Length: 74
Image (cartoon, one colour):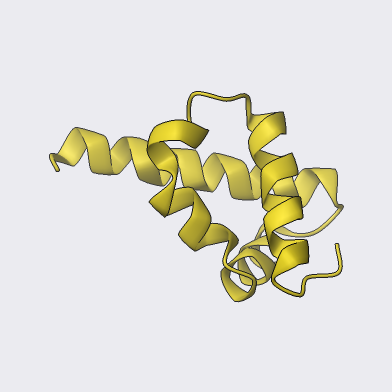
């Protein structure tokens, strides 16, 4: 994996965390902690190849569904 790809992945994760925070009225740090606790960050990293082809709104919806399955209440 080259530096450009790593940068793109990081940028995508940061964007998704920010969008998740905005949609559910959380701070960025609260959103990150929630997504970290309920495997949302791992999901974004593991499924980047497919998820980044979708809209950010779709990714945020996917994160909510995944985190709910892992015990999250948002």
